[in-house]
Length: 217
Ligand code: GAR
Image 1 (tube, rainbow, N blue to C red):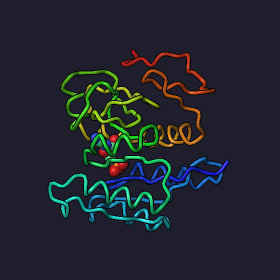
Image 2: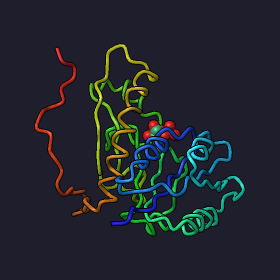
Image 3: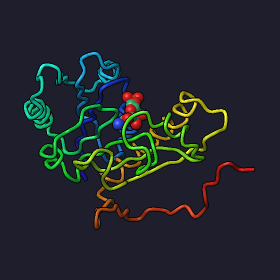
């Protein structure tokens, strides 16, 4: 089976993008990263992508003013130019219209730094610490028009420590982000994820039977 052609959309440093690029270096990985697209010309991830020999494009949202459809037409044109089949949002900090999301239904993933449906939106680590949760983590989900919603493909949890700061917690979460994003993209690219009644069903998934306990005393 041919590898799925994937675009990674970024706005910043692109560490998740780099993790996907790394995973896709393996020729047996079912997806190849054919494009890294940023809405910010200064996104650090663009140079990382170029250094890895990957095509990059910038569609600067500020040049479109309030004309979101025009911004998205430019995104769509770049995706079509590179014959993209799956879109991965990776720290892409623009909201997309229902129209654009609908075009990519079942073919666009996002990573969110929290265990959804908890802590949608921004500042997830700060809010998790304030709430006093003992488990926090990350989620890869299909994108739907409603922000940080949509069928969940994969999640990973980390323990929250009493002495965690936003920074230490973020550093632990980002590590699991990198692992679950490449796992989730693999499952989707292999066609093993079916959406049934708004939930993902994964063919041949090995189910861990242990419990994740925190704190362990
Ligand atoms: C990641 O933690 C990602 O989960 C988050 O932005 C960071 C991007 O880091 N995404 C969101 O908050 C989306 N609402 P990266 O550029 O190093 O991958």
